[in-house]
Image (cartoon, rainbow, N blue to C red; front, side, top):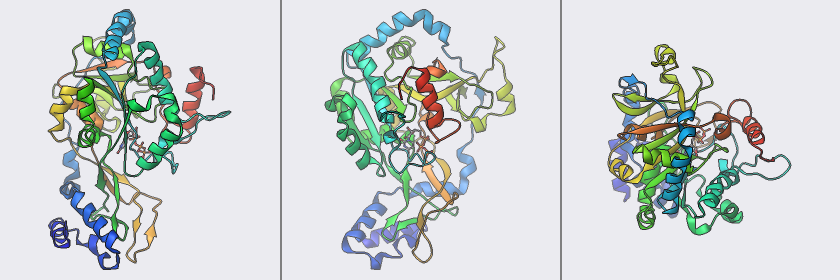
Length: 408
Ligand code: UTP
């Protein structure tokens, strides 16, 4: 993109200030800034002016989950179906590791966090060990796709290579980077992170399939005959990945997506719950749950919105490919954004000072025709690490790992 073209694009969106230090930059920095301007989708910035419209929900009704008793009664046959699909190479896994892990407050990618007490035990290591259980059970390797972002790609790939992928076969590990989105102040003006660089943030975990496609990795998916992708978060160290029983249940129920869920531990627990929205599968976030929905009961007298999602979904690839063509809703999230002040000095804010733009994986569920909420035992499969201490923290995850027999 030429300087003239960049000026034109910025003027269209009222962002001319992005070039304010252009004259001070070296030739290389100028080119990098022009490239960044070219690659940035500025149309999303307009969403700041109608934020309320973005979060409107349709009519919410309950969606029944497959509960533990039903799973236990069918465990053997579901597992058999799942293992057959895994052995046929039809199941891949996608690790979402592009987040910033701001709440944990470590400079390194979250997966590099060492939660061991008497020995080293990294988050990535826990996840790979869990996946290896299935590799051993099925006696076959499973392709693992790892999503990183511009902010952590280098360190993530270097770390995993240094650690020999914790015993995983390198040919089965594929990295791809998610896209970045501009970060803006409350008026929708893009912040400058450096004189020659706009402030950006990873574009949310919902961009994973489009990013995977843009990086060319769908070639691997097609070549290997992968029909299902199990997407999971980096921060749940008890995560069961490519779980044969879950895979089998989703296949047998002929659903486009399976979602692992846990019983909420309190009506107001801060997890998104599975539901139907205008008759289609969906997730209602905890802050969208009205008192009426929170207290609603199903025909058995149980809470109607009782099953929280844990960011472990099994998507059918053809349905994802259909979806990739469509747009996911945009979420605008408040964030602390490091930037240059009026005098060009770097500022690291203590409080949120603007917005980032994200697509969320949970919105992909609403685009699918059918979904199987599949209950798992909370204390065996859900130990998220969001914070250092307190709820969903390093401390709580350590206790749960010990409860499950892991030496720390
Ligand atoms: P969270 O929503 O908990 O965000 O991510 P986070 O970035 O890890 O942590 P905070 O909010 O800054 O403290 C849930 C999952 O989605 C991934 C994360 O890596 C995690 O596995 N994620 C999130 C991405 O891959 N990309 C993103 O842009 C955001």
